[in-house]
Amino acid sequence: DIQMTQSPSSLSASVGDRVTITCRASQSISSYLNWYQQKPGKAPKLLIYAASSLQSGVPSRFSGSGSGTDFTLTISSLQPEDFATYYCQQSYSTSSTFGPGTKVDIK
Amino acid sequence: QLQLQESGPGLVKPSETLSLTCTVSGGSISSSSYYWGWIRQPPGKGLEWIGSIYYSGSTYYNPSLKSRVTISVDTSKNQFSLKLSSVTAADTAVYYCARHVREVLTLRIFFDYWGQGTLVTVSS
Image (tube, rainbow over all chains, first blue to last red; front, side, top):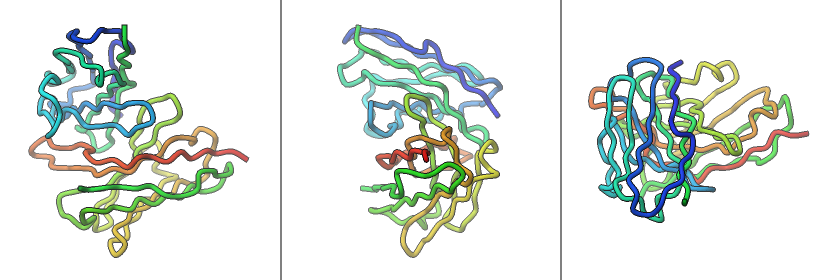
């Protein structure tokens, strides 16, 4: 299995802050990397696919970058509705795996 | 608008089989562009992909669960189902069904529509 790690596991930030979350794969996954946002009691929501492609309807303050083993999700200016947990997911292998998540809460 | 809805027992006894169904509305499960998947999330923990199925019945499973998982599809009812056998407390989780886009050559492989999730507790 391809293992995914994320850092930090949690962070506190203020509205308007620039936030960066990192995801690392245990082997190269090219650009087969997706990002999801999950709020408490809700299903995950797809934000970014193929490492840097913005899913339709997702605000442009979200962006993704990276390839190979190292990836980042950036929120350019954190909004109140962005406080949530963020997961990366590799889709390179037919056995897809998710990262452990990064919780973004209010400072 | 595509919608997915999980249904099934919320409580299962240890060693028994967990059975859930996902009903798809607002679109056809027989679309050639999509697989249909199951993902679970233990309380307070992360996400784990269980397996996915194509409308033709072709399946692939998480190797760590493969020996206990069966996913099937009923195109006449626009539904797909999950069976997980020999459950233990470790299988207690919110179970989600989702549409699984799999366009390998364009890197478009992701879950884009999700059900609301259903909590299944394994307890005697």
